[in-house]
Image (cartoon, rainbow, N blue to C red; front, top):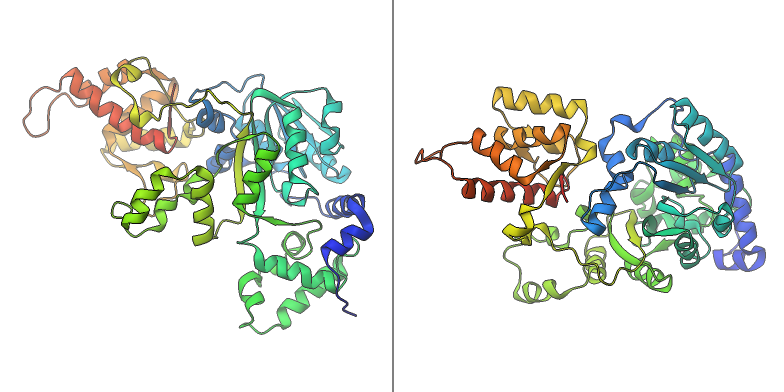
Length: 449
């Protein structure tokens, strides 16, 4: 029998503790994510890029850090696949996982042992109990968890209380705009009392039968249902029967950050939030936009993107303690003096044997090297490098290099001007190399410290 009830009514009657018990029961019955124990993200550079502390630390401080000895918290670690990614992406770091679900924690510990990760520990505690660990963290990863917290600001404050002064928090929220139809479905299934307890096989089957029986032209079915994925229990639970799930907007995220006295650093997938990418010709904007965009704050730019193109399921962000004196100059604006003391690094996720082999083949065959094949980039067309630029990157594969070494290498690679055949001077080589590196740094293929 269907009766009208809302999440607000349910929270009033049962309280936050009941919601937490339901969440715990849901993940005890089906630990998330459902990933085979022997699967490793070792060869998934994009996934490791996201979980690599080097990436947000560089965006925040324009410094290249060493992960050896870093202490990393995976808050809401679930079945441990992301804890494994954190361990692989951050060599030498200590991994600490917490979760409400004992079943998930047991699987997480088993997973990391299976892959030979020994510097890891797991605790069944809530966020509020974090200080009881007596630890301070360099990086806190909280993926797919904050949207089910009763109070996002309280969760952020809990993280801040155990975050080192230069630490970074990665968190994300479900987008209220992108997932609005899933929230409509959740409300419907609450009315059907499928979420009064822990949804099990009966409730999941009712969801499947309901969605399958709707006409294909019905908006809810068109926008949320996938016939093949609908056979996956995890898909049903995490979208239609997700206990405590709530959507947020960019404005709500920034309000929570201000309330928690934390500072926004960047979107994790910042390339997917580029406002200019929504225009036919970013170099020929309407006058109002051309005059207004340079003055917009990150919050305003992201809000406009969300209103125009609400396609991102997650509002995935990095934040940290306020750093009022911190304003690193963009590399594109560096002076010659800035460059002269620079050391150039290849991003750790490009330092793989597969990348080195592809680089060597490009250089030997004098063909283009498609760098976006090895580390994701959002461009509609692949990002390719000519063999001379590839040779510079290969020099970085073994060790970081001072700018002078790269300029010297470039002069030997390209000693003559291709048209006049005049010798390339050191000053010309310096300009060419810094221009190439600045473009690569924009996408974090190289890091410059």
